[in-house]
Image (cartoon, rainbow, N blue to C red; front, side, top):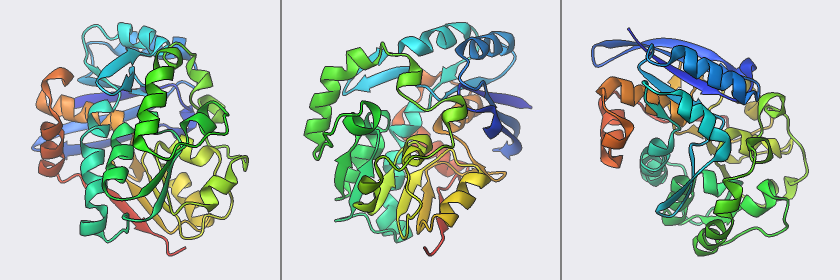
Length: 301
């Protein structure tokens, strides 16, 4: 049995494991949270290096990508260096391929209106594939990176403006500690109404679940949430807040929609290839071969 382990700096309360069979092979897929402790993440990777088929890095990206340039995140470097034998992925390959493909099919294949709808992406720089796909599908997008991440009152309304801003701040952001950029440990699962008006003014809220949930108001009546990394408790909470439709770009495995890093690690383990050998088309093709479908839940809110 091949083992895929996601080491996340997120909350250990969200840990999950599942065993499954894909194309005749057995896999055990695990998510292990370190509650924001990077040193613990490094120790776990060092302990398991060479003993598992693939690592996922959760709660942090390996690189901050700006167009064709990539700035390695300083906080991720120790975790990356600890994996000397086992390949490590952060979900970037899936975000830039499968997420695009799914979003471009949401209206035609799944009947979820996108064209002309107002879409809020709280942290588009972490989900550029998703942001670009929503723009291409005809959504009226608002990119909240300056607002949600840096507290600046400047929502961005065009992809060109987003790309320009990200190209300027990218090298700086890459040097910041992860605690300044992403909810980790006990900060996950807590919501504030600070930016509730942005949610009220949009039909679709898209991106990493912790960014999406961080400022989610109580009343989300009829909204479409496009995300992943949701637990059953998260799904119940979205239902309670009267969300209309939940879409996760990763499949429901044992009651949990894992993060993109987990599914990308699973594909690496399945193919036996190094991440650099896999193309965007490979990810889409393999997702189809193993019949990994997006999770679509219609709550009717």
